[in-house]
Length: 205
Image 1 (cartoon, rainbow, N blue to C red):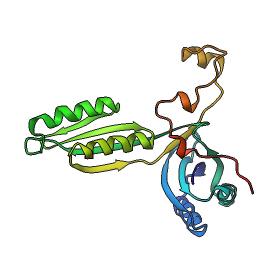
Image 2 (image 1 turned 120 degrees about the horizontal axis):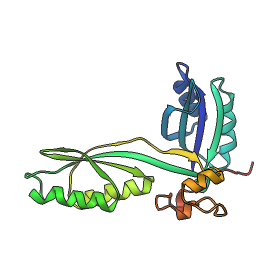
Image 3 (image 1 turned 180 degrees about the vertical axis):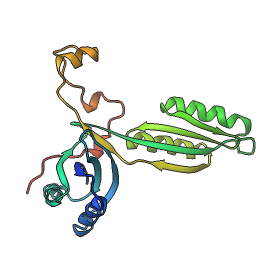
Image 4 (image 1 turned 30 degrees about the horizontal axis):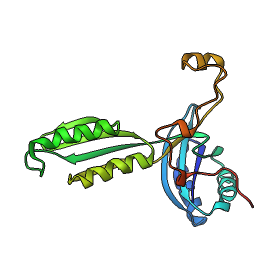
């Protein structure tokens, strides 16, 4: 079962090593780990996706809190947070490819269908940039392979998550949303994770 944790940690040397060592001691595999600056000074934001038993979430969270560099830890699921991943895909495309001169136009069409965009164009390759759920990115990669294109390189950031919040009336007005309309749920989000990737936040001991 997949669990997603968002941890705020102090910007100190060795923080990443400590977190990785913690999961190694717990014998839990990290599926993806994304680290970057946060809204707080001298604090980084980690989004950790790990595969563990359903009842292991409380133990993982408690272990993260025991690290002296940890400021805060939150566990999120798809109904409570916006979850996204960035992917760069370099595809072989040129006169020498199976589709010949039409290869680029066909890749352009695929990019439009999946809402990806072209960020680099070379004589023998095209690079696409895509932001969305992991399943959506996997779908684009599968279609490219099934269309007999050669994928030269793939670079993925791993999942990034941010908990949805209760917006003030001023924010709702700026978004063009009625004040009495509830926050959008994952079911209204075309890029939301599929049902089999639900990430629970409450578990039995």
